[in-house]
Length: 494
Image 1 (cartoon, rainbow, N blue to C red):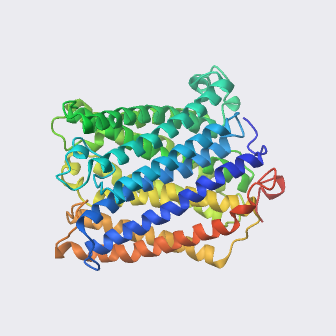
Image 2 (image 1 turned 135 degrees about the vertical axis):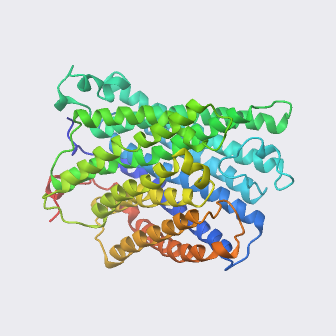
Image 3 (image 1 turned 180 degrees about the vertical axis):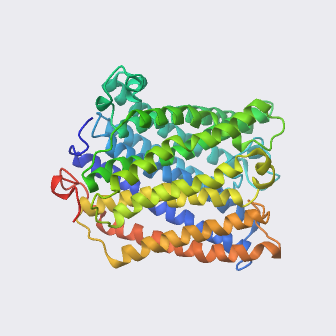
């Protein structure tokens, strides 16, 4: 296995600092928008209904987009230890991403686009007067720019991996799975995870680009029609895969950092490699669990969506969570904020999957899917799972590469973030249990109490995120001054 302690080029450190900062800053902003929506649903403030759906649109789009940007920074940072990556591609992706974000923001807040991140056909072209054609164009065009940037990035990651390992089969460790090569010579976990993410995201982004282009054509040529079921399948194939890939990129932080804290290597043993191969396959084909309420879907697709949804979350999650526990067990690790966020992300991943698996059951889905149960699952999965990975990476960069020391405010914010996200998610799950619909701007009195609780805990989590971002901004200018971020003398913190 490659040495996990090889040096990281200072240019790479500086390259990822800005997108990680942007990720943290805009995740905070999206959290604030979420609290505003909850305040409105709790009747604590009143905002224009059109504005509510604009905030809902940017909240979902922005949270996934900027979390993906931060997670891609984690993947690029650590993968650069093992393969030769072209940093210009990363820069091009960032430029296209920012151009796309500007386009999306103008489309939403200048031209009132409020169709949700799903932009379900034919909604962009048939708004009933709620938004201008220009708004839909800017939103769809901005999403296309963002998608093209990420597609270039994952093509570059694929090129670099294939250039070194020869093929995806080699970098996924298939020769080692089938006993053709020694297990100890298997590709490192970072390469395996990056291979999986590249395969699934190239698939997802091509599907997304196809439906975005078709939707843009339909805007200006209504005679060009799309089969609505095909459109919905393409949208959810794109959205589900891309959103789930965030945690698969972020988990690279776990594979890289826990060995440095404990002095124990994370090996790509056979079960680990099999788990990643299975998740590569399952992640691409389980998106129909979002379409279980669409009775016109072929039954076999819905059954696959249910069954494989049970199976998809388990292989990588189990080997990663179990591996993390085994590496930490009796290692003498001294916990700091960075390592705490790393382990927190494993907890968030585990508990976030549970309500998702429940919702993927057809008989439950028919009752629960269009309720607040789904945001409850997703805020657990993304908040304490994927977002915790990004925050942990922020703390890692500033602590070991910019000489930041943990302060009481960091530890207090860590616990505040946990309490806030858990309380917020619980309020959503309870709302789903009492059949509160999601995506509604106004709630009847019976639905108000959980919203008030959500406001309280959501505000706590948002303020904690503000502290994390502020601390990163203050210290991030020092990142990239040294050749290595975590040398032999600091592998085991004491």
